[in-house]
Image 1 (cartoon, rainbow, N blue to C red):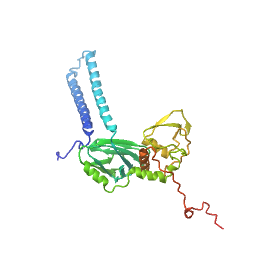
Image 2 (cartoon, rainbow, N blue to C red):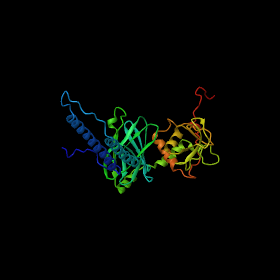
Image 3 (cartoon, rainbow, N blue to C red):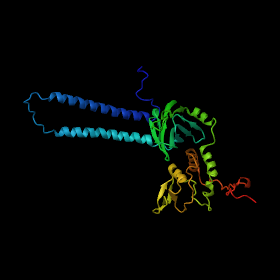
Length: 342
């Protein structure tokens, strides 16, 4: 019976042993201090109990060395926990620069996974062993929480916002994926699996039935949504050139319609690009008028991720040519249904 019982899930990532060791240290210190305080309290209660009705205890004026000791020792223990915790936390939240990026969208009650190469999954995530993986997360409806216990990682997933976590799997196998934030009546069914594969097996899986890459899908949407009408990347442009803007500092002139101090810049990360698509007036690039319409409600979170992936990959001279999609007369609808041709 007890042979199958596990205090903790398997350790299957590079940070799992660090997290477990820190937790074990905190638990052991807590238990030892609790035991010490309990034993001393009971011992003092017995040793210094009132021995008779007429017994008058001697006054106690304190002990400076003792008071210094029971102050400095706990402070030292807390500082050890704090510094150790900062180190482990930094290792958990700061991904390596060469981490492969995967996107996950949470919705009631499933996880939708997108790989840059085009593969899509529902409630499953295939990753290679020994390679750092960064998962960029967002939600289509309510707050979820992306949790992989065997990797000792979890991250809240908030609607309208991007968050991320990273891990590097160390053992091949299948591990549980949970939503650990109550998200509705069928929250308990929002579970999935993470399949850790050898590199060769992962590449084989990646090539089987893969759709066109995420950036290519984003390029199609970029053209379909007529982004190239204004973002032409040439002298006739009506909007900023998006080539090579990712992870650059962009000068802006207005925030929510209010003119701000000249020289103010924002960092063009995933969140900034997303905000600019859904709320164009939130941060207007310096030197340009706010003429862009909002695409809120016109694109899904998955489509947003595809467009963002395309813009991130857009290098100098790669803006697609401007296209004009004019409907044929047969598809033009009469704007005034009450007016009939004579």
